[in-house]
Amino acid sequence: MRHLLLSGLMLCLMLSLGGCQASLPPLPAWQSSEGRTYAELGHIIDLASGQVISPAQLVQRLADAPQVMVGEKHDNPDHHALQLWLLRALHARRAQGSLLLEMLQPEQQPLVDKVQAHALPADLPKALAWQEGWDWKLYGPIVREALQLRVPLLAANLSPGEMRQAYRQPASLKGDKSNAPTVKAALLEQVRAGHCGMLPESQLPAMLAVQQQRDRRMAERLLAAPQPALLFAGAFHARKDLGVPLHLADLGASGQSKVLLLTEVGEQVEPGEADYVWYTAAMPEQDYCAQFRQ
Image 1 (spheres, rainbow, N blue to C red):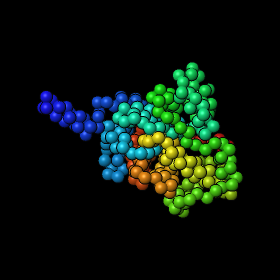
Image 2 (cartoon, rainbow, N blue to C red; image 1 turned 45 degrees about the vertical axis):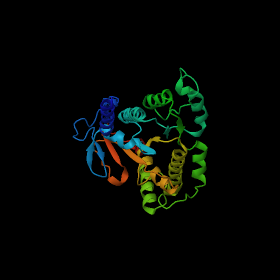
Image 3 (spheres, rainbow, N blue to C red; image 1 turned 30 degrees about the vertical axis):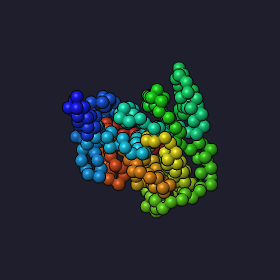
Image 4 (cartoon, rainbow, N blue to C red; image 1 turned 135 degrees about the vertical axis):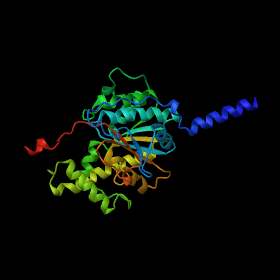
């Protein structure tokens, strides 16, 4: 009997050290049409070492972090399929404390809480007052999975009124990391590019204030959320060198948070931007600024 118990313990230990590969859900098939021939397609890189790691190793390394931030390209279906996979994989390994979404605003939280307390309604997006700007076909499976798993689903963004207030009366944020000149300069350039260079220079500081207030709110919500907490947001919000991780540090967060960037093949991610990058198929290239140049 003693030998059987020892054998069982050794088996459990071996499975744990191996990353519990057998318990992982199957990976989704690629949906985006571009980048299928790239050698790095599907590779997960540990940016600290430069080594390629397996999905099982990624889950193992993320599972112990108090906060995990996953950066996405909003319109890439593969990013959302991998987010759904990651939610399932992490929850299977240990209970997921909470899931926070950039796509949810504070006014929606009572609606989310009401839905979580009952059976899912037939028209879930209507019950949640889901915003049309976020494609339900992409985000719906993630939202539905979190609700079915009974993982607390939390709004991470500012309300429209709070965004207007941040724009009209920009408030200074406390903390050295998020206020570093290099950070503000890089974010200003991102704001400028995100508005196709059409935004008057006089409006850039106010838009920067909105961006940083959103990052600060996401950090505050992560710290207040049941742990381990998982945040899905745009890539710039998740970046270690520009976004939410800087605000976590300025707020005195304890523990080592982790950042995973979901990135289309052909793009470059530097070690200072994230802990891990997962290269995905790409959407057809679009010139989003063309309509503004006509």
